[in-house]
Image (tube, rainbow, N blue to C red; front, side):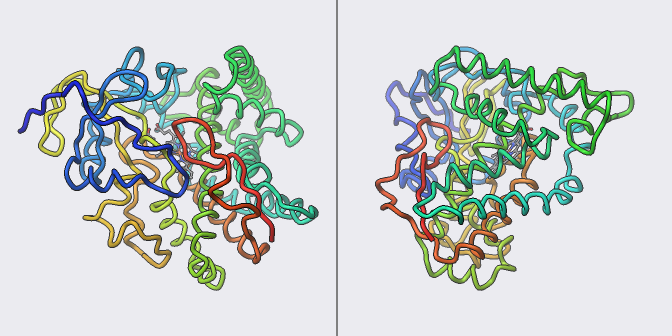
Amino acid sequence: MTAVDPTPTCPHFPFGAGRPVELEPEYIEYRRNKPVARVELPFGGQAWLLTRMPEVKALLSDSRFSRQAMRGLSPRYLEDPIADEGGLPMMDAPQHPRTRRLLNKAFNRRRIETMRPAVRQIVDDLIDAMLTQDGPVDLVAEFGSAIPREVNCALLGVPAADWDHLGSLVDDVVHQGLIPQEQLVASWMALTGYFTQLITARRAAPEHDLISALTEVLDGDDVFSDEEIMMNAVVIFVAGYETTACQIVNMVCALLRDPDQMQWLRENLDRIPEAVEELLRFVPLTAVGVMPAKATEDVEIGGVRIAKGDAVYSSVVSANRDEDVFTEPETLNLRRGREAGQHIAFGYGPHFCLGAPLARVELQVALERLLTRLPGIALARPEAELPLKDGLVLRGFESFPVTW
Ligand code: HEM
Protein backbone atom coordinates (compact mmCIF):
# COMPACT_ATOMS: atom_id res chain seq x y z
CA MET A 1 0.00 0.00 0.00
CA THR A 2 1.45 3.39 -0.99
CA ALA A 3 0.83 6.20 1.45
CA VAL A 4 0.48 9.38 -0.61
CA ASP A 5 1.11 12.58 1.28
CA PRO A 6 -1.48 15.24 0.57
CA THR A 7 0.62 18.05 -0.89
CA PRO A 8 -0.21 21.68 -0.06
CA THR A 9 -0.50 22.55 -3.76
CA CYS A 10 -2.46 20.29 -6.04
CA PRO A 11 -4.56 20.66 -9.18
CA HIS A 12 -7.84 22.54 -9.00
CA PHE A 13 -11.03 20.60 -9.58
CA PRO A 14 -13.37 20.77 -11.53
CA PHE A 15 -11.04 21.00 -14.54
CA GLY A 16 -13.20 23.30 -16.68
CA ALA A 17 -16.47 25.16 -17.07
CA GLY A 18 -18.45 21.92 -17.45
CA ARG A 19 -19.71 22.32 -21.01
CA PRO A 20 -22.55 20.01 -22.02
CA VAL A 21 -21.68 17.00 -24.23
CA GLU A 22 -17.92 17.56 -23.72
CA LEU A 23 -15.64 16.01 -21.12
CA GLU A 24 -12.50 17.89 -20.12
CA PRO A 25 -9.39 16.22 -21.67
CA GLU A 26 -7.65 16.21 -18.25
CA TYR A 27 -9.66 13.10 -17.33
CA ILE A 28 -7.76 11.03 -19.91
CA GLU A 29 -4.46 11.97 -18.25
CA TYR A 30 -5.86 11.30 -14.76
CA ARG A 31 -7.20 7.86 -15.71
CA ARG A 32 -3.85 6.98 -17.24
CA ASN A 33 -1.48 8.33 -14.59
CA LYS A 34 -3.39 9.39 -11.45
CA PRO A 35 -6.59 7.35 -11.09
CA VAL A 36 -6.63 8.19 -7.36
CA ALA A 37 -5.58 11.85 -7.25
CA ARG A 38 -5.50 14.64 -4.73
CA VAL A 39 -7.37 17.79 -5.88
CA GLU A 40 -8.17 21.23 -4.52
CA LEU A 41 -11.87 22.14 -4.37
CA PRO A 42 -13.28 25.60 -5.23
CA PHE A 43 -14.65 26.37 -1.74
CA GLY A 44 -12.15 25.00 0.63
CA GLY A 45 -10.04 21.96 1.22
CA GLN A 46 -8.60 19.06 -0.66
CA ALA A 47 -10.21 15.78 -1.56
CA TRP A 48 -9.45 12.59 -3.48
CA LEU A 49 -10.75 12.25 -7.02
CA LEU A 50 -11.39 8.82 -8.55
CA THR A 51 -11.57 8.65 -12.35
CA ARG A 52 -11.43 4.96 -13.40
CA MET A 53 -14.24 2.40 -13.39
CA PRO A 54 -12.77 -0.12 -10.84
CA GLU A 55 -11.93 2.49 -8.21
CA VAL A 56 -15.24 4.38 -8.64
CA LYS A 57 -17.22 1.14 -8.29
CA ALA A 58 -15.10 0.07 -5.30
CA LEU A 59 -15.82 3.34 -3.49
CA LEU A 60 -19.54 3.45 -4.29
CA SER A 61 -20.05 -0.04 -2.86
CA ASP A 62 -17.84 0.36 0.24
CA SER A 63 -19.78 0.97 3.46
CA ARG A 64 -16.65 2.37 5.14
CA PHE A 65 -17.35 5.62 3.27
CA SER A 66 -20.05 7.82 4.82
CA ARG A 67 -22.20 10.50 3.22
CA GLN A 68 -23.55 11.71 6.54
CA ALA A 69 -19.99 12.53 7.57
CA MET A 70 -19.78 15.04 4.67
CA ARG A 71 -22.12 17.42 6.49
CA GLY A 72 -20.69 20.61 7.92
CA LEU A 73 -17.28 22.01 7.14
CA SER A 74 -16.07 19.35 4.73
CA PRO A 75 -14.02 20.04 1.63
CA ARG A 76 -16.57 21.20 -0.90
CA TYR A 77 -17.22 22.33 -4.45
CA LEU A 78 -20.29 24.43 -3.60
CA GLU A 79 -20.16 27.64 -1.60
CA ASP A 80 -22.59 26.40 1.04
CA PRO A 81 -21.98 23.22 3.03
CA ILE A 82 -24.00 20.26 1.77
CA ALA A 83 -27.52 20.68 3.14
CA ASP A 84 -29.01 17.54 4.61
CA GLU A 85 -32.77 17.71 4.72
CA GLY A 86 -32.94 14.02 5.56
CA GLY A 87 -33.00 12.79 1.97
CA LEU A 88 -31.83 9.48 0.51
CA PRO A 89 -28.60 10.64 -1.18
CA MET A 90 -27.11 11.70 2.17
CA MET A 91 -28.19 8.63 4.16
CA ASP A 92 -25.93 5.81 5.35
CA ALA A 93 -26.83 2.32 6.57
CA PRO A 94 -29.00 1.25 8.34
CA GLN A 95 -31.34 4.17 7.53
CA HIS A 96 -30.60 4.05 3.78
CA PRO A 97 -31.33 0.34 3.07
CA ARG A 98 -34.47 0.52 5.19
CA THR A 99 -35.77 3.52 3.20
CA ARG A 100 -34.88 1.95 -0.17
CA ARG A 101 -36.59 -1.32 0.85
CA LEU A 102 -39.83 0.49 1.66
CA LEU A 103 -39.59 2.72 -1.44
CA ASN A 104 -38.98 -0.27 -3.75
CA LYS A 105 -42.31 -1.74 -2.75
CA ALA A 106 -44.10 1.24 -4.34
CA PHE A 107 -41.65 2.78 -6.81
CA ASN A 108 -40.55 -0.14 -8.97
CA ARG A 109 -40.26 -1.29 -12.60
CA ARG A 110 -43.90 -2.46 -12.67
CA ARG A 111 -45.25 0.99 -11.78
CA ILE A 112 -42.88 2.70 -14.21
CA GLU A 113 -43.82 0.51 -17.21
CA THR A 114 -47.49 1.36 -16.66
CA MET A 115 -46.50 5.02 -17.07
CA ARG A 116 -45.11 4.65 -20.63
CA PRO A 117 -48.42 5.61 -22.37
CA ALA A 118 -48.80 8.66 -20.09
CA VAL A 119 -45.21 9.73 -20.82
CA ARG A 120 -45.87 9.36 -24.55
CA GLN A 121 -49.02 11.48 -24.26
CA ILE A 122 -47.15 14.21 -22.35
CA VAL A 123 -44.35 14.22 -24.95
CA ASP A 124 -46.76 14.30 -27.91
CA ASP A 125 -48.78 17.14 -26.35
CA LEU A 126 -45.59 19.17 -25.91
CA ILE A 127 -44.58 18.54 -29.54
CA ASP A 128 -48.12 19.52 -30.68
CA ALA A 129 -47.70 22.81 -28.81
CA MET A 130 -44.28 23.39 -30.40
CA LEU A 131 -45.67 22.73 -33.88
CA THR A 132 -48.25 25.50 -33.48
CA GLN A 133 -45.42 28.05 -33.25
CA ASP A 134 -43.66 29.70 -36.19
CA GLY A 135 -40.24 30.75 -35.09
CA PRO A 136 -37.51 28.93 -33.17
CA VAL A 137 -38.69 27.19 -30.01
CA ASP A 138 -36.60 26.82 -26.85
CA LEU A 139 -36.16 23.08 -26.43
CA VAL A 140 -35.11 23.53 -22.78
CA ALA A 141 -38.24 25.36 -21.60
CA GLU A 142 -40.80 23.78 -23.90
CA PHE A 143 -39.57 20.19 -24.02
CA GLY A 144 -36.58 19.10 -21.88
CA SER A 145 -37.76 20.68 -18.60
CA ALA A 146 -41.47 20.29 -19.27
CA ILE A 147 -41.23 16.48 -19.67
CA PRO A 148 -39.84 15.60 -16.20
CA ARG A 149 -41.95 18.32 -14.55
CA GLU A 150 -45.17 16.86 -15.94
CA VAL A 151 -44.09 13.22 -15.62
CA ASN A 152 -43.05 13.67 -11.97
CA CYS A 153 -46.36 15.37 -11.20
CA ALA A 154 -48.26 12.52 -12.87
CA LEU A 155 -46.14 9.93 -11.01
CA LEU A 156 -46.77 11.48 -7.60
CA GLY A 157 -50.43 12.22 -8.27
CA VAL A 158 -50.26 16.02 -8.39
CA PRO A 159 -53.43 17.30 -10.11
CA ALA A 160 -52.72 18.84 -13.54
CA ALA A 161 -54.02 22.23 -12.39
CA ASP A 162 -51.08 22.44 -9.91
CA TRP A 163 -48.30 21.36 -12.32
CA ASP A 164 -47.05 24.87 -13.17
CA HIS A 165 -47.16 26.07 -9.56
CA LEU A 166 -45.31 23.02 -8.24
CA GLY A 167 -42.85 23.11 -11.15
CA SER A 168 -41.83 26.68 -10.29
CA LEU A 169 -41.27 25.71 -6.61
CA VAL A 170 -39.06 22.79 -7.66
CA ASP A 171 -37.23 25.11 -10.09
CA ASP A 172 -36.27 27.29 -7.13
CA VAL A 173 -35.10 24.33 -5.06
CA VAL A 174 -32.86 22.93 -7.82
CA HIS A 175 -31.39 26.40 -8.45
CA GLN A 176 -30.40 27.01 -4.83
CA GLY A 177 -27.30 29.15 -4.60
CA LEU A 178 -28.48 31.11 -7.65
CA ILE A 179 -31.65 32.66 -6.20
CA PRO A 180 -32.13 34.84 -3.07
CA GLN A 181 -32.13 32.84 0.17
CA GLU A 182 -35.59 34.13 1.24
CA GLN A 183 -37.10 32.96 -2.05
CA LEU A 184 -35.50 29.54 -1.60
CA VAL A 185 -36.83 29.19 1.97
CA ALA A 186 -40.33 30.31 0.91
CA SER A 187 -40.38 27.83 -2.01
CA TRP A 188 -39.09 25.00 0.18
CA MET A 189 -41.82 25.66 2.77
CA ALA A 190 -44.49 25.86 0.06
CA LEU A 191 -43.26 22.63 -1.55
CA THR A 192 -43.16 20.62 1.67
CA GLY A 193 -46.51 22.13 2.74
CA TYR A 194 -48.05 21.13 -0.59
CA PHE A 195 -46.95 17.50 -0.27
CA THR A 196 -48.02 17.33 3.39
CA GLN A 197 -51.56 18.32 2.34
CA LEU A 198 -51.53 15.88 -0.58
CA ILE A 199 -50.51 13.03 1.74
CA THR A 200 -53.37 13.82 4.13
CA ALA A 201 -55.80 13.83 1.21
CA ARG A 202 -54.49 10.50 -0.16
CA ARG A 203 -54.58 8.81 3.26
CA ALA A 204 -58.28 9.72 3.39
CA ALA A 205 -59.01 8.70 -0.20
CA PRO A 206 -56.22 6.72 -1.94
CA GLU A 207 -55.77 6.90 -5.71
CA HIS A 208 -53.45 5.02 -8.11
CA ASP A 209 -50.47 7.34 -7.65
CA LEU A 210 -47.12 6.98 -5.90
CA ILE A 211 -48.11 9.11 -2.88
CA SER A 212 -51.07 6.81 -2.19
CA ALA A 213 -48.85 3.75 -2.66
CA LEU A 214 -46.28 5.16 -0.22
CA THR A 215 -48.97 5.59 2.44
CA GLU A 216 -49.73 1.87 2.09
CA VAL A 217 -46.25 0.24 1.95
CA LEU A 218 -45.53 -2.27 4.65
CA ASP A 219 -42.28 -4.14 5.33
CA GLY A 220 -43.03 -6.52 8.21
CA ASP A 221 -44.55 -4.00 10.60
CA ASP A 222 -42.41 -1.14 9.30
CA VAL A 223 -44.19 1.79 7.58
CA PHE A 224 -43.31 5.32 6.43
CA SER A 225 -44.38 8.27 8.57
CA ASP A 226 -46.05 11.23 6.81
CA GLU A 227 -42.84 13.22 7.31
CA GLU A 228 -40.84 10.50 5.52
CA ILE A 229 -43.32 10.28 2.63
CA MET A 230 -43.15 14.05 2.22
CA MET A 231 -39.33 14.02 2.18
CA ASN A 232 -39.17 11.10 -0.26
CA ALA A 233 -41.70 12.77 -2.58
CA VAL A 234 -39.59 15.95 -2.64
CA VAL A 235 -36.34 14.01 -3.18
CA ILE A 236 -37.86 11.95 -6.02
CA PHE A 237 -39.22 15.09 -7.69
CA VAL A 238 -36.02 17.10 -7.32
CA ALA A 239 -33.61 14.23 -8.20
CA GLY A 240 -35.66 13.34 -11.25
CA TYR A 241 -36.12 16.87 -12.56
CA GLU A 242 -33.01 18.78 -13.59
CA THR A 243 -31.10 15.53 -14.35
CA THR A 244 -33.60 14.36 -16.95
CA ALA A 245 -34.26 17.91 -18.20
CA CYS A 246 -30.57 18.52 -18.93
CA GLN A 247 -29.95 15.09 -20.43
CA ILE A 248 -32.87 15.20 -22.91
CA VAL A 249 -31.48 18.41 -24.45
CA ASN A 250 -27.81 17.37 -24.12
CA MET A 251 -28.60 14.13 -25.96
CA VAL A 252 -30.37 16.01 -28.76
CA CYS A 253 -27.27 18.22 -28.97
CA ALA A 254 -24.99 15.16 -29.22
CA LEU A 255 -27.13 13.80 -32.07
CA LEU A 256 -27.19 17.15 -33.91
CA ARG A 257 -23.39 17.17 -33.76
CA ASP A 258 -23.34 13.79 -35.50
CA PRO A 259 -25.89 13.92 -38.35
CA ASP A 260 -24.94 10.48 -39.77
CA GLN A 261 -25.68 8.70 -36.50
CA MET A 262 -28.84 10.77 -36.02
CA GLN A 263 -30.03 9.71 -39.47
CA TRP A 264 -29.18 6.06 -38.72
CA LEU A 265 -31.22 6.25 -35.52
CA ARG A 266 -34.16 7.85 -37.32
CA GLU A 267 -34.12 4.89 -39.74
CA ASN A 268 -33.73 2.35 -36.90
CA LEU A 269 -36.11 3.51 -34.21
CA ASP A 270 -36.27 -0.01 -32.73
CA ARG A 271 -32.63 0.55 -31.66
CA ILE A 272 -33.57 3.54 -29.44
CA PRO A 273 -33.17 1.65 -26.11
CA GLU A 274 -29.61 0.61 -27.00
CA ALA A 275 -28.80 4.09 -28.38
CA VAL A 276 -30.03 5.70 -25.13
CA GLU A 277 -27.60 3.52 -23.13
CA GLU A 278 -24.72 4.73 -25.31
CA LEU A 279 -25.91 8.34 -24.96
CA LEU A 280 -26.08 7.88 -21.18
CA ARG A 281 -22.48 6.63 -21.26
CA PHE A 282 -21.15 9.28 -23.61
CA VAL A 283 -23.02 12.48 -22.65
CA PRO A 284 -21.60 13.56 -19.28
CA LEU A 285 -24.22 14.93 -16.92
CA THR A 286 -22.37 15.95 -13.79
CA ALA A 287 -19.52 18.41 -13.73
CA VAL A 288 -18.02 16.90 -10.59
CA GLY A 289 -19.33 13.45 -9.77
CA VAL A 290 -21.87 11.84 -7.50
CA MET A 291 -22.35 12.80 -3.82
CA PRO A 292 -18.95 12.80 -2.11
CA ALA A 293 -18.23 10.53 0.86
CA LYS A 294 -15.79 10.52 3.77
CA ALA A 295 -13.65 7.57 4.90
CA THR A 296 -14.65 6.42 8.40
CA GLU A 297 -11.38 4.47 8.72
CA ASP A 298 -8.17 4.10 6.68
CA VAL A 299 -9.07 2.39 3.39
CA GLU A 300 -6.96 1.34 0.41
CA ILE A 301 -8.39 2.15 -3.03
CA GLY A 302 -6.40 1.48 -6.21
CA GLY A 303 -3.25 0.91 -4.14
CA VAL A 304 -3.52 4.29 -2.42
CA ARG A 305 -4.24 4.81 1.27
CA ILE A 306 -7.25 7.03 1.90
CA ALA A 307 -6.92 8.22 5.48
CA LYS A 308 -9.81 8.24 7.94
CA GLY A 309 -11.67 11.57 7.56
CA ASP A 310 -10.59 12.18 3.93
CA ALA A 311 -13.30 13.20 1.43
CA VAL A 312 -13.57 11.37 -1.89
CA TYR A 313 -15.26 12.40 -5.14
CA SER A 314 -16.12 9.66 -7.65
CA SER A 315 -16.35 10.76 -11.27
CA VAL A 316 -18.91 8.52 -12.92
CA VAL A 317 -18.60 10.59 -16.12
CA SER A 318 -14.88 9.79 -16.30
CA ALA A 319 -15.43 6.10 -15.48
CA ASN A 320 -17.86 6.01 -18.42
CA ARG A 321 -14.90 6.81 -20.70
CA ASP A 322 -12.56 4.23 -19.13
CA GLU A 323 -10.33 2.85 -21.92
CA ASP A 324 -10.07 -0.54 -20.15
CA VAL A 325 -13.85 -0.99 -20.29
CA PHE A 326 -14.95 0.69 -23.56
CA THR A 327 -13.46 0.52 -27.07
CA GLU A 328 -12.73 4.03 -28.38
CA PRO A 329 -14.51 5.57 -25.38
CA GLU A 330 -14.23 9.15 -26.64
CA THR A 331 -16.44 8.31 -29.63
CA LEU A 332 -20.24 8.23 -29.61
CA ASN A 333 -21.19 4.94 -31.23
CA LEU A 334 -24.93 4.26 -31.14
CA ARG A 335 -24.27 0.71 -32.39
CA ARG A 336 -21.92 -0.10 -29.50
CA GLY A 337 -24.36 -2.74 -28.28
CA ARG A 338 -23.86 -4.61 -24.99
CA GLU A 339 -20.63 -2.79 -24.15
CA ALA A 340 -22.56 0.48 -23.65
CA GLY A 341 -24.60 -1.24 -20.93
CA GLN A 342 -21.55 -1.24 -18.65
CA HIS A 343 -21.88 2.52 -18.04
CA ILE A 344 -22.53 3.84 -14.55
CA ALA A 345 -24.39 7.02 -15.51
CA PHE A 346 -27.02 6.07 -12.90
CA GLY A 347 -24.40 5.46 -10.24
CA TYR A 348 -23.47 2.14 -8.66
CA GLY A 349 -24.04 0.28 -5.40
CA PRO A 350 -26.65 1.08 -2.75
CA HIS A 351 -27.31 4.64 -3.99
CA PHE A 352 -27.93 3.49 -7.62
CA CYS A 353 -30.49 5.86 -9.15
CA LEU A 354 -33.94 5.04 -7.80
CA GLY A 355 -35.54 6.58 -10.89
CA ALA A 356 -33.38 4.90 -13.57
CA PRO A 357 -36.28 2.92 -15.11
CA LEU A 358 -38.40 6.08 -15.33
CA ALA A 359 -35.49 8.15 -16.71
CA ARG A 360 -34.99 5.48 -19.41
CA VAL A 361 -38.67 5.63 -20.41
CA GLU A 362 -38.57 9.45 -20.56
CA LEU A 363 -35.35 9.54 -22.62
CA GLN A 364 -36.46 6.77 -25.00
CA VAL A 365 -39.90 8.28 -25.62
CA ALA A 366 -38.60 11.87 -25.93
CA LEU A 367 -35.97 10.93 -28.54
CA GLU A 368 -38.26 8.58 -30.47
CA ARG A 369 -41.07 11.15 -30.75
CA LEU A 370 -38.72 14.03 -31.57
CA LEU A 371 -36.89 12.09 -34.34
CA THR A 372 -40.22 10.94 -35.77
CA ARG A 373 -42.19 14.17 -35.58
CA LEU A 374 -39.46 16.79 -36.15
CA PRO A 375 -37.30 15.14 -38.85
CA GLY A 376 -35.75 18.47 -39.85
CA ILE A 377 -34.80 19.57 -36.31
CA ALA A 378 -31.82 21.95 -36.33
CA LEU A 379 -30.20 24.49 -34.02
CA ALA A 380 -31.34 28.06 -34.68
CA ARG A 381 -28.07 29.54 -33.38
CA PRO A 382 -24.48 28.26 -33.31
CA GLU A 383 -24.00 25.93 -30.34
CA ALA A 384 -20.97 27.88 -29.08
CA GLU A 385 -23.15 30.99 -28.58
CA LEU A 386 -25.79 29.30 -26.42
CA PRO A 387 -25.95 30.28 -22.73
CA LEU A 388 -25.10 27.48 -20.29
CA LYS A 389 -26.72 26.60 -16.97
CA ASP A 390 -25.04 28.39 -14.13
CA GLY A 391 -23.77 26.26 -11.32
CA LEU A 392 -21.14 23.65 -10.77
CA VAL A 393 -23.20 20.51 -10.47
CA LEU A 394 -24.94 19.61 -13.75
CA ARG A 395 -23.97 20.34 -17.36
CA GLY A 396 -26.78 21.83 -19.41
CA PHE A 397 -27.94 24.62 -21.69
CA GLU A 398 -29.93 27.55 -20.34
CA SER A 399 -31.72 27.69 -23.67
CA PHE A 400 -31.52 25.65 -26.88
CA PRO A 401 -33.46 27.30 -29.75
CA VAL A 402 -34.43 24.91 -32.52
CA THR A 403 -36.28 25.00 -35.83
CA TRP A 404 -37.57 22.00 -37.83
C1 HEM B 1 -31.06 11.12 -17.04
C2 HEM B 1 -31.63 11.05 -15.86
C3 HEM B 1 -30.97 10.68 -14.57
C4 HEM B 1 -29.65 10.47 -14.28
C5 HEM B 1 -28.45 10.54 -15.22
C6 HEM B 1 -29.58 10.13 -12.87
C7 HEM B 1 -28.41 9.82 -12.20
C8 HEM B 1 -28.35 9.46 -10.87
C9 HEM B 1 -27.13 9.10 -10.18
C10 HEM B 1 -25.73 9.05 -10.80
C11 HEM B 1 -27.48 8.79 -8.90
C12 HEM B 1 -26.56 8.27 -7.80
C13 HEM B 1 -26.00 9.43 -7.04
C14 HEM B 1 -25.15 9.05 -5.86
O1 HEM B 1 -24.48 8.02 -5.82
O2 HEM B 1 -25.20 9.88 -4.96
C15 HEM B 1 -28.90 9.02 -8.76
C16 HEM B 1 -29.61 8.87 -7.58
C17 HEM B 1 -30.95 9.12 -7.47
N1 HEM B 1 -31.84 9.37 -8.48
FE1 HEM B 1 -31.36 9.63 -10.43
N2 HEM B 1 -30.84 10.14 -12.35
C18 HEM B 1 -31.73 10.45 -13.35
C19 HEM B 1 -33.10 10.54 -13.25
C20 HEM B 1 -33.83 10.28 -12.12
C21 HEM B 1 -35.28 10.23 -12.04
C22 HEM B 1 -36.20 10.40 -13.23
C23 HEM B 1 -35.61 10.03 -10.72
C24 HEM B 1 -36.96 9.91 -10.07
C25 HEM B 1 -38.09 10.28 -10.61
C26 HEM B 1 -34.36 9.93 -9.98
C27 HEM B 1 -34.28 9.73 -8.62
C28 HEM B 1 -33.10 9.50 -7.94
C29 HEM B 1 -33.03 9.32 -6.50
C30 HEM B 1 -34.21 9.39 -5.52
C31 HEM B 1 -31.69 9.09 -6.20
C32 HEM B 1 -31.09 8.85 -4.81
C33 HEM B 1 -30.90 7.37 -4.60
C34 HEM B 1 -30.20 7.04 -3.29
O3 HEM B 1 -29.42 7.84 -2.78
O4 HEM B 1 -30.45 5.92 -2.79
N3 HEM B 1 -33.31 10.06 -10.85
N4 HEM B 1 -29.41 9.40 -9.98
